[in-house]
Image (cartoon, rainbow, N blue to C red; front, side, top):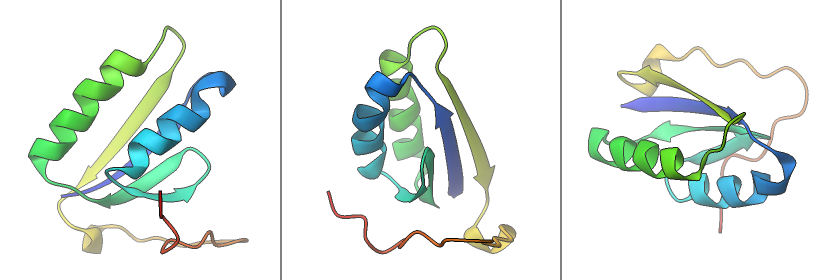
Length: 86
């Protein structure tokens, strides 16, 4: 499945969340990740996020059957999607 995850967390934890999500998905923009992931890995990711979040943190996960269902248009600067090395 293809997912897009957007999040809003306290600034003190942004780096930690970013490093964590890079293990699973591509970082495409500040606080936005996307990519193909299995249902099992997505379940693992969600469970781990639940243990990391605090009161005012927010994660939104958009699920698609495949990337072909996503019509992606970039206006402005395009972050290098292939430069996702940890």
